[in-house]
Image 1: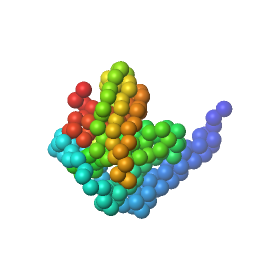
Image 2: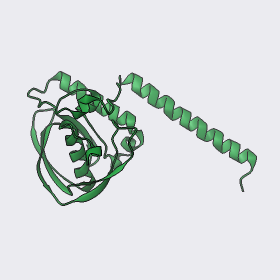
Image 3: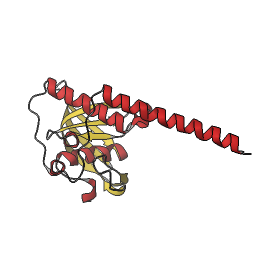
Image 4: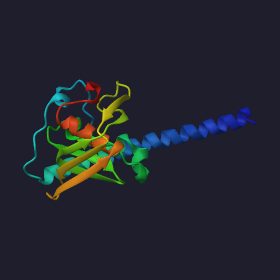
Length: 185
């Protein structure tokens, strides 16, 4: 049975834990020099991004800052290695380059110049976007299977086949590179 003393003890513990988490995130943001997210209705989110011809140190830096920003905004999912399914596109950090950071299949990778080669099937997926914080989740019909070609930061061509929510994530992030948002569907 709950009594007043037990309730206050539990509430205080929860408050201390929450305060500690916010302090950790604030320190993480400062140490990793994490910038702000570009938010809708910024025109950069509606522009088509430019292909990258050269992968240099600035692209590595941009990729690392995107991963840090993604980790900052989704800390629990990124600490639980098995549930990595969030992504971020360069326009969301104010850069009009074809670059995305995605947590897929247990690891976060930067994908340069991603392009959809093949799509098939349909799956309904509940989506949300960090750049549209004042919009609610929306159920979107996306491709069930997607084949994407991209380059790694080491300038190696790769092909990725994704299914269900992973396919939807890739389509969502590639949409950002083409100036499309989930609210358009």
